[in-house]
Length: 316
Length: 121
Image (cartoon, rainbow over all chains, first blue to last red; front, side, top):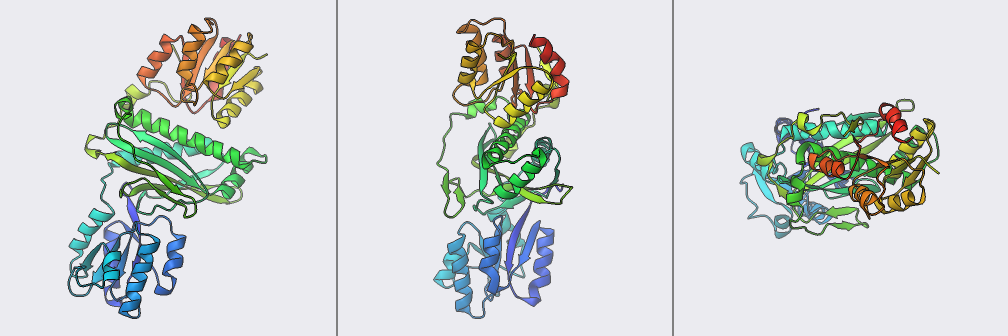
């Protein structure tokens, strides 16, 4: 697994002149770019629930009015996604029509990609995640999935940064992560039907949604426990009485808000039954909405945390 | 009548542990949280070993084992925690309450079966 998180962005820019420059910029700056024709923007947006932002061009539509309408439509549908507009002359939002001005968060020109990098750091890669933490979460989560879904193969993509707040699938779990250096939540999201199908195959019996709920709950519990043992220790006690903010879930729009603008750190797993190649996706998303101090991040030394292997009985 | 009481709010864990122990020849009862665990233990004098999670709703596992000793005054039943928790403070609290062993999840049946058999007889 690559330690540096990436972010998936939509590139809404038809310029052939700047296409190579944008592609190179994305490759060099950990962006996974999806180029989209203006006729299919909204359908692509609907089918992607894990985006980090949008690179937009002021000449994307056939006319300035159409360009403005597209920007406004995207902003109305997904206001949490930063729309970064490429201007021909000056990197400013000031002279844009009001509709565009409201929709876009920042501007850049093709001649100054350094400024674009700063914009990305402000709007997408705004939280620093220690490599040891990324590696640790990947190890913990992969190991838990492997033990709980024994006959399935587990594949993990490079972790990525998500600004979207759309919930993937029909089923998710949520658990608090509390420490002296981080406060927030972990969510696991998955699709019920394929997950149920795989679970039924592994158990060789008919399973219902409650079985899936319960397994997802136990996977969440195991990841949470391992995270706590490795990174939090007893600091949770000190952090337990701090402020909370409401979490809003809108079922109709499959949307969850943690009350902050912070992006989510996302790990995407593919669970596959090697005998049938049937697969399902599980997202582990971390949102540190209440507190994030990576400078205080520390790993509890293994020798202190685990004298006895997990699963082994430590007799007193 | 059972020899072992498995207390966990997760039915995945309850089923996995109970099914493994039954296959190993042990009589197993289950409870869904600490409160349920206390009442099942009180109702069944044959139980010799309680295997309990720590983090559970209604009543957590450590409170349950403390109550087993203090309120039920049951000083003979063996207590083992099966939990994601591994902090020294938690273990100390468990030891003080008379917990005999601690397992950090996930459950690895074969490595503990023989010891469980001894503790349950």
